[in-house]
Image (cartoon, rainbow over all chains, first blue to last red; front, side, top):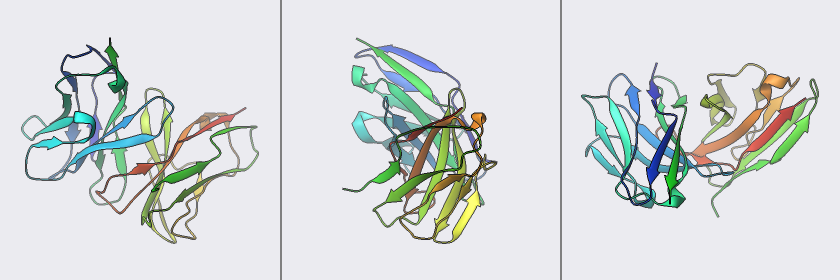
Amino acid sequence: AQSVAQPEDQVNVAEGNPLTVKCTYSVSGNPYLFWYVQYPNRGLQFLLKYITGDNLVKGSYGFEAEFNKSQTSFHLKKPSALVSDSALYFCAVPHRGNNRLAFGKGNQVVVIP
Amino acid sequence: EAQVTQNPRYLITVTGKKLTVTCSQNMNHEYMSWYRQDPGLGLRQIYYSMNVEVTDKGDVPEGYKVSRKEKRNFPLILESPSPNQTSLYFCASSRGRGEKLFFGSGTQLSVL
């Protein structure tokens, strides 16, 4: 079954420093991969997705993600974190063969002023 | 404005009392889905629907029912709620598999 793992529960980063949120995947074939963000007391919002092609995907709010097939990773990155980036981040992958969607457990990002 | 609307935002109920959480989207999306969010477990898919009258189980369907009689609506029904269904629920829609999801604002359900 397709799945994603987010190995860290929480990431703390100082404002202005680079931010990385990790995601590894277990997928047969070529995966679709997504990142979503959940701000406090809000629903999830789409950030970006990888389908095929360029391994560096640019998304909303200055975020980007790098698809690495050899490491089966799809880490989310931002060159300079803002306090307003403090949120819960989810990696997700559609199942192959059905229409389910699997989410990771989520990563709480805390950006310290 | 394109949106997914869930109601109610908060719901407190007692064990065994049937309830329905409504979900409606105005984007003519074919795919709709329900998730529950629990601390440490992330989002888990309950049910999804590929189109009108087409529904299928997700990862945690036990204790839930859904229906898709119209394209825009996808209600979640708990016929006999139990305390382990206390959770934050999200409805979402998209144009189809592999497309980005649009989420509702969530329904915080407490079953006493």
